[in-house]
Length: 284
Ligand code: KIV
Image 1 (cartoon, protein in one colour):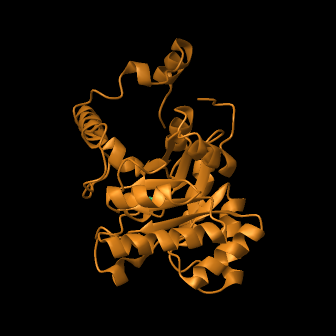
Image 2 (cartoon, helix red, strand yellow):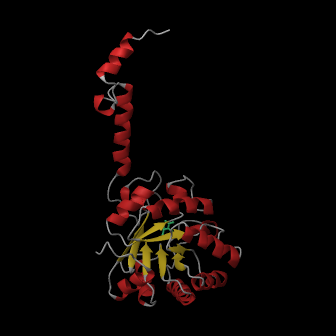
Image 3 (spheres, helix red, strand yellow):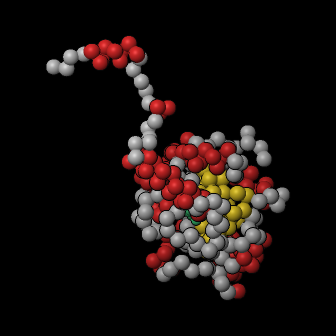
């Protein structure tokens, strides 16, 4: 692990070629991004999952460009090593090429090193080529694509049959030809993800896609056990921040109510001289 080196799209490619796993976690704020970066995680995704984890929506549909810009700026201020990737939110890249490039440009100017978008329709493939030829690195996203929740109809595993696995591979190849430097595969059977990963040149980053992807991504709130909503089957919770936070908040609440906090170590005091003057002052 070389923390002096900045991770780039080329680093991703080299890691795939050398069979070195790529790590990615989401982050939405400065401190968390800083800790992730200091641990040597290769990339940080400012995911539109912030719609659920930070903003309390039930899905990603209501996340705006303004939301993404605010959190991308916060994250990028905390990062010096990892690659920062920011999600283009719902409807920010579906209207026209001009709007897509402006929106992607705003995320890059907010500190992202790359943008991620979902799907592989011919319209989107065209947009990816346009972004890449304008100097913007792009990550694709296939399998379960949360911004399509209403047309998919629920949180379903994608590519569950031989035919659908081949369709996913075809989309992955098209994304690759359009210029993406990596592809997120979400909620895809492990065998299908393996097959896709072995048959494309760019690295795949799996979430709920098994261990054969070239890298893995998880939502930080799931990893830390902080999210108040449901934790998906594919996420591994490494600690229980919700419990730790609840304990600390309860302690604070009780200590204030029982006059325990603040104690002398948390207070500022007048000098004795000033105190005497104050005591002898006549209140008018
Ligand atoms: O928004 C997000 O966090 C994502 C990951 C689930 C890959 O897109």
